[in-house]
Length: 139
Image 1 (cartoon, rainbow, N blue to C red):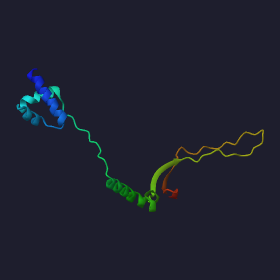
Image 2 (cartoon, rainbow, N blue to C red; image 1 turned 90 degrees about the horizontal axis):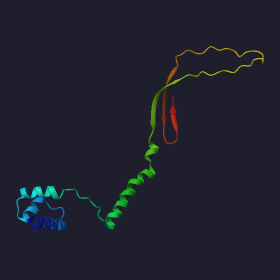
Image 3 (cartoon, one colour; image 1 turned 90 degrees about the vertical axis):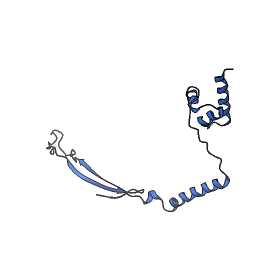
Image 4 (cartoon, helix red, strand yellow; image 1 turned 30 degrees about the horizontal axis):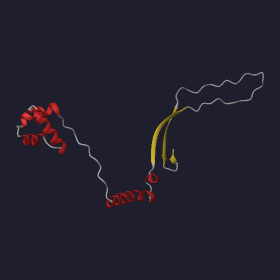
């Protein structure tokens, strides 16, 4: 077996035992220089980040999590945040209140003619305040 293949077998054995091992410690274990081991690592293996797995919770930790969650929910039951919140908004609204008026006329007469209002629309600032129940104030 060539020397390169023997080194590769030793490297794979080291990785099977301890994956997060450094390249310097592998080179030290194989009794070769780190600089000569580096091209070998670049061609054969790559460095990746490990995936963190969640640890098992002990019953004490689980009880602590539940008590903290209950402590966070409890104030919202007695004094809800959304029920205390009041929102407001100001908006410039343009409106044109024109409408056709109905008038009585005889069957043989034409409808009355009415002059259209000017082209300038009316602008109003609408100010409104509301909460979870509905509108509190508007002007």
